[in-house]
Amino acid sequence: MNYSLVLSPNAETDLAEGKLWYENKQLGLGEKFLQQVNLYFSKIQDYPKHFPVRRGNLSEAYIKNFLISLFTKLSIKKL
Image (tube, rainbow, N blue to C red):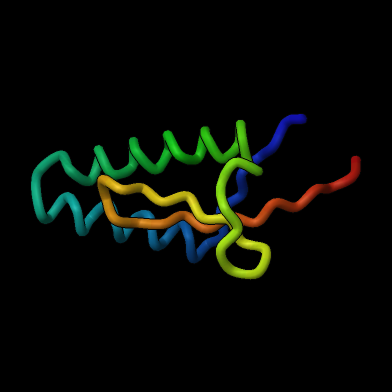
């Protein structure tokens, strides 16, 4: 089954702010942050049920290098 990933506007804003925050800490770190997030997005798309459910129906993917958790909700849409 193919899964797609849809970000809420709030999530997009949070990621952009996170990139800026890390970039202000060290040049190039913001880009590394986004690379790690995108890597986890790929993992979530490939194996959405791999990540533990933490809050209600939200699964958590923890990115240790950046001390951030990505929370996702699996929803299936019929075509």
